[in-house]
Length: 362
Ligand code: GLY
Image (cartoon, rainbow, N blue to C red; front, side, top):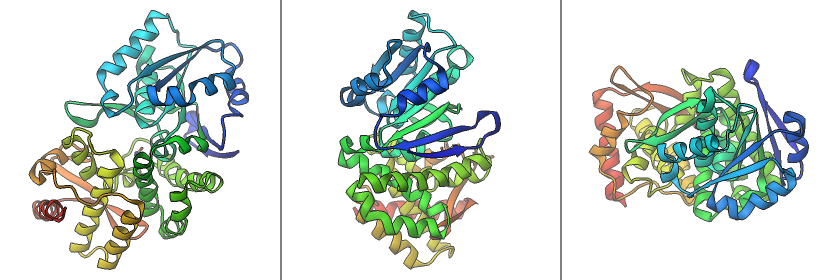
């Protein structure tokens, strides 16, 4: 089992990476003793695949489960209310531990409930999708969508620990798996030149879901995010590098009413922002080609015919990186390095033209 520590003073915690659930019982007993009440929060897909196994290994008699419908539409006020209701009806008190068993939606909703129920209870992340394993389970960003906007309501709430079982990737469908690789690509593109080379050199193993190799590759990817979170927990500076491709991506995701997956939307966002950075002279055309080839190899989209470029630009104004009316985006300066860049009116027009060209290219 690999272990990676997240240093956040009194909120520090560990990320454990293994290829099965075997060690979770030991870990839960070590952290919470033997008489803690656990509430597993999961979706119907993960419940069907893993709940029985998880419960058996945890040997939980004091364990209950709340299940909601899989999909982004469940990342809502309604789901959060239903969970509060579930907890209150059972008189669940502050000594309980919530367990997020599932992908990004499960982790974000559970973290949000853990941060708000009774002003905060403990929770553990057990991510089962690639996106959640390398990104959303780490760093304590939690929340829900609303008002047709992605992640518009949320809080920072760090987990007690994260347990990644890489074998759960075996049951992830191909589309979600590929979409999860987008966040690994983001880490490669912001984590330094070596990180990018490492990702490129290991892409075949990632695509083959080589379970042994994946443990190490996931640890490397998590490590990049961990360092950024340790330096900037509340995203005032370097943590925002992880938003490469996300300002355009979130706008596209919301515009399609989540018909397109997060990783697919971010893929289009990455390609668009690489084109922008090239036009502005920050990177070379060959860098755009390398990223394009990599996205193609992963099987991710770089354009979408249903987008309305003007609507996407409007939606970008609701991004969390808008300050005093200026949209701040993350742009590449080379493969592996990025910077924070404020868009002026002319830049916004360039991005609009790029989005129009991507729509036509479909
Ligand atoms: N998903 C980006 C972050 O957690 O900051």
